[in-house]
Length: 364
Image (cartoon, rainbow, N blue to C red; front, side, top):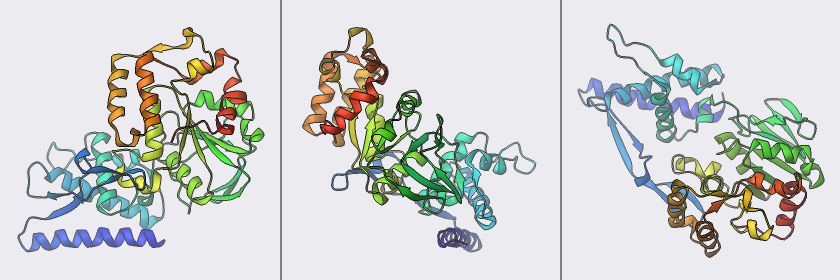
């Protein structure tokens, strides 16, 4: 059994013994865990990432509003312990079904919906300082990769230079005991927001011409993609470039990659990529590349509200970012990556991105 597996089981059993001891002493069993709300999240300027603070919360068994969550936490932990001991993994969806049942002769279920079990899994992560991936749990794969690297995936060697149009499906568990980096000549990594645009780059063999790795996460990147990006930065020392739509939601995706997210602040040290560089689309690109008005989309009220919120984020306080965001508001339009196709269908891969990287025309 791996050292991390032994540690998790040991922590589970110690907590269980504490609960049993409390019952035997006629006391109210409790478990203490970090608060995961906005009130316990802060931005670490030195490390340039969102982190979880030190505030704690206590969950007790003899409390009408907390008893069910208390039970659910230990029920899921018991099932995770079985997975670890059997050295198998399963999906968070399957874990939900494995632990859902009606309690005794009551009409009460342990869980009614997966939306109940997912937050409890996150509680277990923070309470026992163990990532979901270390709990032998995975989510559905989302995202693909091609490029100048050879990867070992669960013992199988994957040459990412010969994967056709679909690429390597990035798994949700990308820890170094599962995914190993073998041979790599890549000089940088390009993260592309959209699958459709990633396919343009793959078809044009951008990764081959520019000696790099290209990947996408189908919008906001899932944990596996973010963990992989972090490992590329840490282990291969590769620059990470991010290519997203010119709208507040594209900027949010960049922010999640670079600083981490508020919901997963406790994982930032393993998933945030503080050195990630934003190479577009910029709100100044319409004028710079003389894009026609027909490719622009007017900002909605929700867009404007979101931009004003982003303007206040501490990680967007740099003058260049403030200029970028205020210009978007002033022009009152947004642009999708596909807008560059109005120049030429391969313009984005043959001219736009290569020029941005060559001229170091990016934001950090």
